[in-house]
Length: 160
Image (cartoon, rainbow, N blue to C red; front, side, top):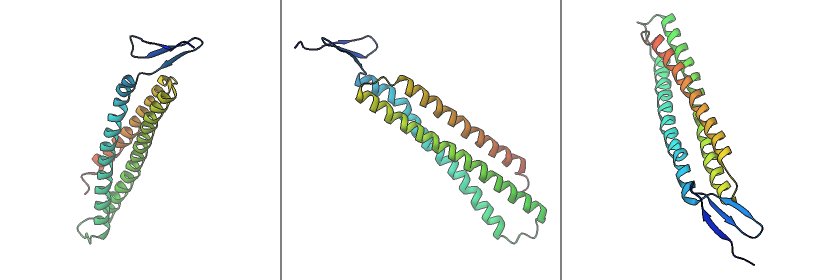
């Protein structure tokens, strides 16, 4: 039985050639490089999620203060409009948080699939590209919801 001969290609992939087999494996170094972007993206998702949750907590606190305060100086219709704006902002931010959590899950699945496919020796470029695109689409959805929340806030900020 002849020994397999390993040749390193220019792109960092390693081709192992034997008498009856030809297998293309990802070089561990190239996998490490290709997983850095999703890993950093996962950290950015955590920071963005923290920002969204902090905004939601402020709205909830202000809504509680509005409901518990004996605010005789404020007209009841204005108080109701502010409460409705708070409710709308909480719904929109809830959706933004939902999309951000989905993005974190897709990014984590991207990292897992990249490592598993490299471990098995299967090409993972198509899977990674599809999941990365899905993650970016979820980022766009969460940013749209954040923008909608900011628009509601700016439309009603003079009322409170």
